[in-house]
Image (spheres, rainbow, N blue to C red):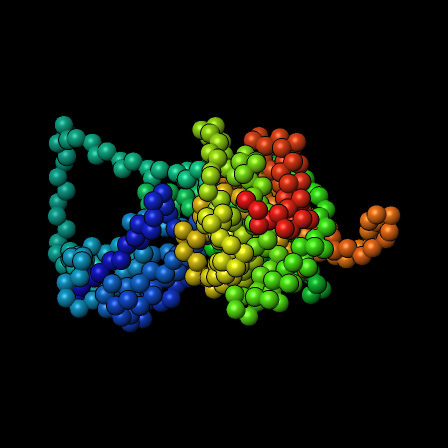
Length: 432
């Protein structure tokens, strides 16, 4: 039997570490080739890691919520044959998995046997050390406080001093999992005095891991870096809704039904021709704004794991029905946890909508490093005055946020007003 170590693979350019979100196996399990061992998360995409061999799980490389560097040990298997390790050196993970067991011929048993021999043998007479014997140098202390910039920033916000933490990462590097463990240690310290008898005084702590941690980091980064301002405008969508109902009635069975979203995407694509400033990404570290001719629209999608933003690439090349199909496909993939990394990155502008729960006004957070996001509020029928008469009209607010470093207020207002004009006169949506 041999040992086969599976290391964390390189999952894409620029990915230095991933987070373990689920283990599919446990120590002692027998696994087969191509069986999924773990789910890991990079950016917002969840990736399944399969086994390349048959074997038995000896040890896991980390806890759920822990970040592992690319190339770090993910899982250790016992396999038939020689494996990919000589098996002579036990790692901490292996030692933990086999704690309390001494194998014949192992380093531990050899030391024990040698110790018994020394107990039976007469003690040797100690010799004086030579006068010029060299002094043994003490081993350098383990480095403390090593951490990635994102970990340092989070520790600063949580009030955790990194120099007092033992890191579990490579070379003692402190990870997000170490911060989570420190937070749990804080809340486990019970206050002095009698325990509350009222069940409503009960508390529970929930570690922020996986998708929720990624969302928290993304939102924090966006609000910390981007000076937002929000512009709200109401739109009369009565004619747009009439057109949508007509198209669905005439073509819905053959081409599929369309929602408001593809029509809004079409209005945004046409408006960006006049205001390319909004179809951009801002690298604030280099001070460079990149404007794009192609329009890649992110569509904020609520999933069981949290908010994800799948991307409709080249939205300017889609018609209403292909846009609707692509939005539906991406939303289904995101909710099923099957969206790949390329489908969750690369957007140049984002749409967010709460549908029927959209409220009157929202202040959407820009999808960093983009510079604009268009928010859709709920549609309501209200009495409006048209040509001196009170009539019922379907009204909807657009709540849109912009990066004030890149887009001035006047430009943002003109951009939203252009979108409004397209939506209120839907025939113009079909004129390039």
